[in-house]
Structure formats: structure tokens, C-alpha cells
Amino acid sequence: MSIIRNPVFDLILTLNKYNSSVLTDSKFEMLMKNFKTNLTNVFYGTLFISNVQKDEVVMKNYERIIKHEAIEYVFYKISTTWDLAYQIGNFVVPLPKGTKSKTKYELLQEEFDKYCESNNLNRIDFRWYKEFSQLRNRIVHGGKNLIVYYEDNRIKFQIYDNNVDEIIDYNDFYNDGQRSLIFADYYFTYYTILLHNYLYEFFKFITQKFIVNNTEKLCEFDEKENEYFINMWKSIEINDDERFKQLIDEININKKQNEKYDFYYR
Image (cartoon, rainbow, N blue to C red; front, side, top):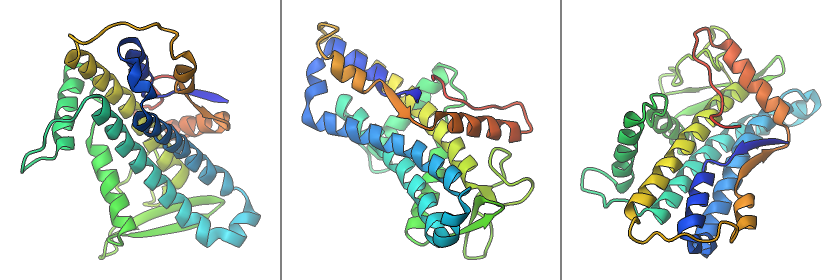
């Protein structure tokens, strides 16, 4: 079983040390459960695509359903995980009030961007998710056309606009050679890594904001007071860990430049 650090774990440790009552708040606990479940399902959704595409019998009988539903599922789970992360952040550190021109999430994002810049986190970029989320919304609401293919035991796809122009640009990490078609499992492996690494830094940022905002209120608690609770949120457990590691290796091999991706912490 692969043990991948839960991006919210450092925040949990800090809350346990300085304000452990938050950990037993029913709303916070529900947000945490939903966050971990959805993030775990991002991994499993990607693994499902990678594994089911090799099963010719299943694909022959259920290809039309599997192809579209699996891709839309992971799109949805990534978006849901992202939203839950910001809800957790808002619970711990109330977000700034929005203005007519910007939402409170955009204002928080500006603060996080400044944090990333000051800490030389050049690869932590909000734009990837904004583009990803727009794609997901257009697919769900019918604004773009998701076309899924099944060739050589691989699920591939592309998204087109009304002029049948391709929406997703070419990327060595997940395109099928020089073709415009995209390997679905490579695509979501790539975005799972981006999501995990982004949220890892996001919650470090939220943790720092919590400490700064509560300096006068901080008082230390017994480190072992919520030991069971802490261990429960420590990691993301993935049963098919070797396959996911292989997927990471495969997308990195595909990349012709020196840029490589992996998890910050494994």
C-alpha cells in the first residue's frame, strides 16, 4: 500500500498543538472526511482508467459507458477536492471579504500567490486549475464536446469546441506521440500530481496564516491528546501503489525536456 502524505496533515498537527478543539468540531471533521475521500478517489479514478482499459472483455461490453463516465468522474473529483480544500482553509482562517470585482477566493488566491513567490515556489501555479476547472464546467454543461476513443487497449480523448478545434494543447506528458489525442491515464496522473503538490503548499500557507492570526490566543495542548485522530488524517492510502508509481515514471519518460514531476512527499 502506497502512503502519500495527506496535504492537510501539517495543519492538523498545528491545530492539535494550539487549538485542538477544532479537530473535534463536527463541521470540520466532515470537511476533512470529504476531502480525504475525494482526494483518494482522484487516485483511484486514474488507476481505474489505467487498469480497466486493459480488460478487453469489459471494454467490449461496456466501452461506451466506461470511456466517458471514467473521464468525467476524475474531472469532477479533482474539482470537488479543490473546493473542499478552500472550505477547510476558510474554516480555519476566515477568508477575506470579497469586493465587487473579486471574490473572497480570488483575494485568498492573491495572498497565496505572494506566498509562493516569496518562497520561490515557481511550479505552484493557480492557472493550471483555472483552465482545468473551465474544461470540466464546459463538459458538464455541454459547452464543449468530449470525444473519447479506445485504441490499442488505451482510453484516449480530446475536447473540441463548436468549430471542432481541439481545446487541450499538446503536452509531452500525456499526448499520444505527436497526435492531438490524449492518454486519459497519463493526463490524470499529471493533474493528480499538480493537485497534490499545490494543496500541500496551500495548506502550509493556511497553517502559517492561522499561527499569525492567532498569536495571542495560542496555547499548547498535550501532543497525544488526539493521537488517534491525527494518525487517521496522516496519509492517503493507495492499494495499487506500484501501478501509480509506474504511471509517474511513464509520463516523465515521455517528457522530452528536463522537467519531471513527482510528489513533494511520499
